[in-house]
Length: 328
Length: 282
Image (cartoon, rainbow over all chains, first blue to last red):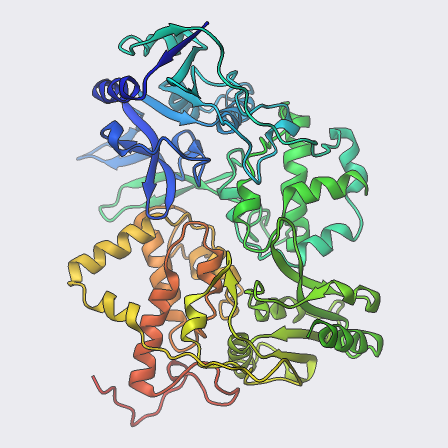
């Protein structure tokens, strides 16, 4: 038995949700599909493979004011902006949802807890949408996920003949379900089509043996040294924090995305840079994902979404890197 | 053509004339990628076909520094299409590369394709033979395109408010990943204004004002220096029509100064020179 809802009922329910929540859903923006706040279900793209960017920005915004220092008459006011709204994120793919669990390991499960991230996590309900097949660049199954993995969302939807199959995963998911018209039907949702074969993922302990050697230099030859792969990645999470004076003399403390691919990222006082060339910087991206992050925080910092593969202008292909490192 | 390219690359590497040959090779998933060949036995990797859109001139910067203090920078061989050759001329003029340190294998070109589609810039392209080379490979080109700036004219036809809204919408998608800048042969500042922290011209915020400032600044820095290779737009993960902006400026520069980027290595770009008696015909 499974619970199903029709496409029309789902749309009506989503419209209902917009009355009490900020609904964030896949939306056509130019030629792209991005998770954006929508006012009505009619703005949502239901038939899509993967959004061009993950939903990371709703938890770790590209730019975020974390402290405002404001001048009063004869006092100074400190103001910490907080998220007022409750959010529902609709049609999150399992990989993008897993990515949030990966980020939790750093931001929530290690002291100090990141209050900005924690608040956004707490005030968001995640509705997953299972993939019916794996995209060309997808390799989630190599990282312990499945295209219909429901373990990281509050509510899971799967495309079925009648419309969408609905699986309640958490209490939070149950709470928003109230107005959705559901019907019990026989059968179970179709299994996604999986690609055969897996990408070899080297054990954390094995990575240090591959650190030296000319492989990384030859890989980095064509790297343009931009930040693209880290900014389209659902698990890259580096940020910078700086204070700026506004036009009226107040101070704003901003936190914004940063990237280990940037030349100045690792530069320290005095000008010394332990990762002086793009060779060390590009290598770091892979080491961070498969060696440092799992060692320090637990999970591998890659969910196999394949965005870096699809978007890299010069065909730096993480699957090819993993294949190569396995035989180094 | 592939055989001639490989034979030349082999000869250059074997004789020690170059220590690296930069060309194209098969990548993953049906894509091609830039190739860096260091050993003569590896030249078989080199290919040239209509998928080879990359402007390889961008990679010459990384060979500018000598491997060790006191040593000379390496000599490199590079494959260039006609459009890329204009970038080479610009870089030669700006003394970013030394002519004697590069061996240029020029390719005649009938246009390159992205996702199987002939690029628009190639349909407009009037240069089918590189403007500078040591060896020319390929057949005499059959057709020549004609630049008419039709898309720029459409943009110019918009009322200012609409045009502003158009660009704000396009730039708003920018994620400040700098792929455009990094793919551009003419963007080679050691420290970009966008990343300078002292003074913090732009700051770290990834918001519309910074995005707009970055793209407009970059477009102006490229005024009279952009060769229209489209590498920026192809690198952009967010589909921002950067070439439209660059072409608008190229059109103005051509109209004002009768100058097209990179026609030779001698003529200075108009905005890099100043004559006392100069007056803008505005």
